[in-house]
Image (cartoon, rainbow, N blue to C red):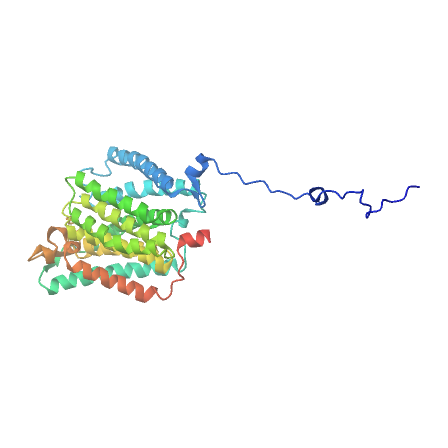
Length: 382
């Protein structure tokens, strides 16, 4: 029987440390994503830019088809879609239905739970919608009252009687509810939500710059100075937010972009002035703030619809240069257009800027103390 080897024997050499140690497990190095995957997908799925591009293409395709069908069926007059309340209703459906289809498909592509994911979730949606309705009507009434008090607007008689009062109130109510759903759905729901998750100051600056530059090549635009004004107003605050790396920085960069584009699209309206365009952009920003403090776009939808309804139907004032058939009261602008708004209507008066500030202050006082500090996007990803 052999004896065990003596470890103290100098002839016996110990094993090298590399052989004595247990082998270590080396985790495989994670592979870098393929460039194609990185180009189209980010941490939150489809990148925001591609999402906006797909949405735009889908909307254009659907709107072309629905619009063509509506014209062939003589439901709308392409030269003057607001020549009657019924034509205006069909005209807004031509906008709203393609938006609904495009947004639904994008939500499916992005694997959102539903269309409500685009800034339409959140607490107390029904109360917020109705408080928005009240706020819009009261704000426009305050503007009309100030114009009348200053002598820049004169009231005439009542233009409707009997059942026509209720008929046109309902028709124009549906028209402007669709206007609120379409415009807020596009800008404060889909675009605001999507850009928030994928934008920074430099992208925002580039987009604002592109739309501002486009006005130079659009000779028939009305009030382009209003777009330039809101673009400049947002420049320094958004740069400061970027440099300070403020939480929710993307939300405010997106608000700058969507508000500027909202002013831009109104430059095609006849009778617009630079004040009216600036007012449209600023009210768009107020609607963005409403999302931040209420958690959804329902207040904005209600406020937008009732503001337009009060202006167009109830008081019968020009709305972006258009006086609608079937309005309740009759009013006439008087005096300097800078104060009366002239052909643009109350939205073209300098007084509208003060009313927008009051609306913003009321929004913050009533809802600002109650908000949870989270937007729909943060709830969706958080």
